[in-house]
Length: 88
Image (tube, rainbow, N blue to C red; front, side, top):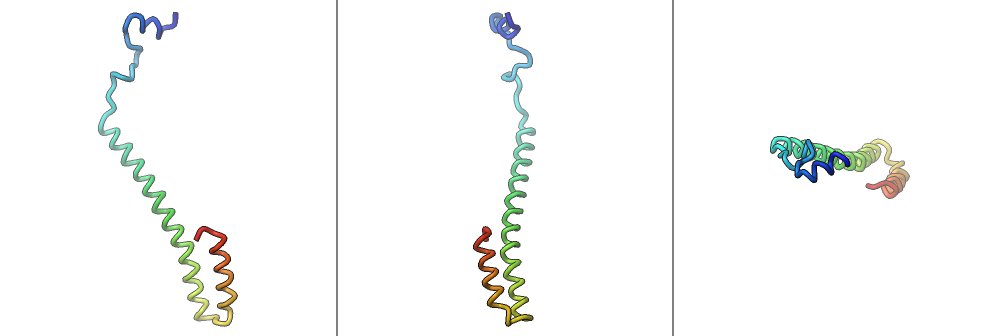
């Protein structure tokens, strides 16, 4: 007869028994802080990356408009195509 069954027949908990241990509040709060920190970091990085990627193109187009006005129509078409194929 296995040990667990023998202890169950005798009414004894198998050591270490999970139900007798309480999870400390400090541990729960620490885990919560870590998880929310990771989620906020991922969210902030994702939003900043998207904004930087899309607005970086607009900034470059403004510079080219000033220095190379004759190439603006070609660059607008390229930027529109690039933005439509990505997630901008």
